[in-house]
Image (cartoon, rainbow, N blue to C red):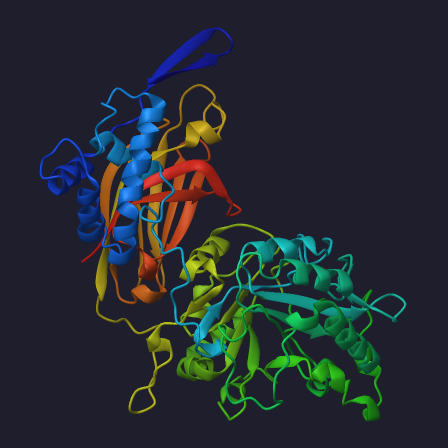
Length: 569
């Protein structure tokens, strides 16, 4: 119990006595059921609860239940609680505290280890991908730096994009958003940072995508610099002609290069590319494009540069992408803007899915997103696009969806695509995300309570004259047929809100669905942000779960949690 004092106009005091809530009735019932109506919970009781109610893995339960009970009992003795110190079980209050507050693998909503098959080709995975990874802010005038690259790698991003241009003296390479007012950073600095931070979050491969605007001499310098800095971390393809991409497992601890082979780059740079990832027209450019001035004899580019390329890339040669989506013997990567993808999906949706079963599709933000805003990533995922590239330097719903998707599979940055995106029918038919399918399963979500705001925020952060008025928004994001939004009641003047509300979400394609949770604080003008998280439905563990919330930039709040229950019916 705590008293919160609020001053009104420095004259009046308002006192609010806030009591942290006890266990919900559902938890009391579970405690009674699995303890056979005993007043204490033994290790055997906990094993049964974790197995039958939480549906946890039996092997991990056997080795951990005794340890959990022992830890709680020892903590009680240390804290000199009133419960008899010789009692070797735990009380219902201790059981509730364990479920809500202990950062234990059995309380988390997701499996924390890598558990997908990592021995399939790269094209079988969604890959955590950044766009213009070197930019600190907007697309036109912000600084270029290696710091956003470091941050992205620390978050688990596996695909880093670098735009390569000649420096002002045309004897070295800058990383810069060409034909804009952005200030450059050296390629050498970016490569050094990638080498240092590539595997701090995940051991699985990092892919560097080069967008290069260089002469053959500078391409050769890029090759020399990349080999020298990355050393043994750099992966070289065994052959120039690949019929299948290597696997994430075989590439652990390695860095790959993906770009257009030099000749293709020179041809595309000389063509009228209307979809040049947001670069301004050449007029007024501060970054010259020397490839427009090359003699025909130089069009082959640097052979040593070409040898670095594991994933050969390309862009569509015109407005109609059907030809580019044809699947032949050699695997490749195709890049489409969000606009081109959506236009292509209207006419060639099945062709896109077939293409992504063997090849890699990269989707990037349209050029008008100069503030570094983002699009909804599901427009790519539902067609099997592996590299759905977002601007990582901002925040907002699209990035929350991205962070939610890649919290799957232990947060390693690679998520195995569902089988239906990799399969073909007897008549070569494939998955159609726009077709409404029957409900496959229903997710039941019960929200009991929240805690931690009083520890993480100042007393007057939400309201100047009273404790906060919290409510929670819960929704589903997925294929067009899978959507739903629910909202709890507002709990007034309480740092420890108890909602005790349950919602149901019918799902047709649960493997592509994300559960979005956001807590807000009701206000007379604009409601305040109280925390958010996004969870992949396909990986949700059933039962009572403690859900950590994150700030708007995706950083975990230290203490804020929700107690929830998930069930599939």
